[in-house]
Length: 145
Image (cartoon, rainbow, N blue to C red; front, side, top):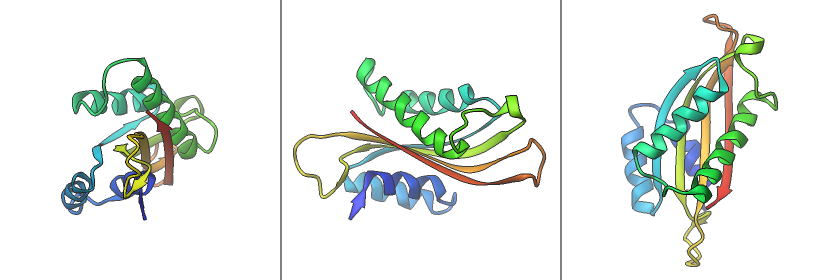
């Protein structure tokens, strides 16, 4: 079964070469998605990069409900990346992340009830701000629209 979380994770971990075909398959399946990259030593920049990409691609409608759902999905995914400590630069950690935001039903085939969900996947590295001192991380956040 294809689920919104699996779709988001596959997009976030995909190589540059496989991403176009994966995105085409996502669209054919009935999901909408945005992908991007961000690196920073501040949590605010991670959140801002994901929100900006979603706004630029018009994945969500304006208004409190959708923005609130996106925010919570980002923070939930970020907790996975940071293993519960939403701190980066203050404790000399930095991240380099691929992100994917997917909108659609929880699972395909859709139940036909109009339920829409939002999944945010973050995948990349975290570590001291020095090359070779990082390791892989992944986080997933899912929220109802």
